[in-house]
Length: 319
Image (cartoon, rainbow, N blue to C red; front, side, top):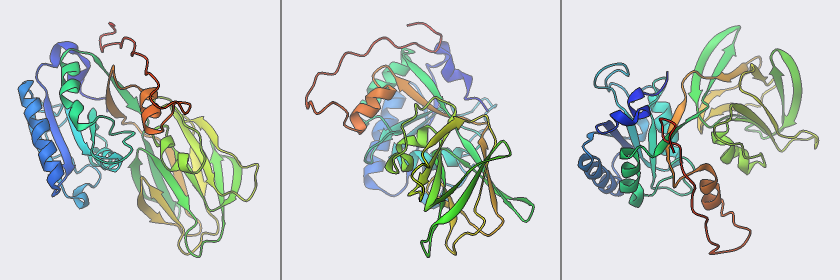
């Protein structure tokens, strides 16, 4: 389902219905939420506070907010927290994704990219139409067990198959469009989206993939064969992963949550999901700036000057 059109039209962004979501019960979060809410009110937006304990962030739990096609639909979500909170928010919204601004209260903040001190500037940019909506690939993971669909899960970052206890290597078969691609003998396999390429995939030696590319990244964990390297392939293809002889503790993990323990004969199907996770970017926060700052790129030249950002294309195509 595409994001609401109000945020895509510069003529309709003077009044937005904005939900502030955050982990409940943390004093710092409450203080920042109050500041963000005050800023939103100054710009004439309607604010709906949605703090919630982490245990309440199940898939599609974000709504009972009004339906996406109703007059009271949420136009924008401001997330307070780190990248983990952003992932929980994507999972919370489920199949009704809403454009998101992430205010980083955590550590790296690849997804939660704005600092708490930048909120006023971001809202000013939105009011002036100087922003863009960047859609990001999401995926569905489906577990096939005993010949039928056992369960499925929507994800944003990655699906991982992990060998688990007793921590011996396992064989992982990868099929692409029904054809056997390879068998990984390894400690596991990460199937990552471009958004997730800076997470578990990066730690395992996988490549960075620009966030707006529709592709999956397949990175084996400690493969026994040195010729097993990361593969990047189109998200339009059909992928299936299976483990003929899993360990007792082998499991499938989606975005840091155990999706299912793996049994002999289980198959995991991974495909591009219909909803897209949508981030709001401003002219001062682009893809490569995030990489420079979060990964400390700079050629070892501390304090090197940062070039002035070029013009940004507004939602109507103007500069």
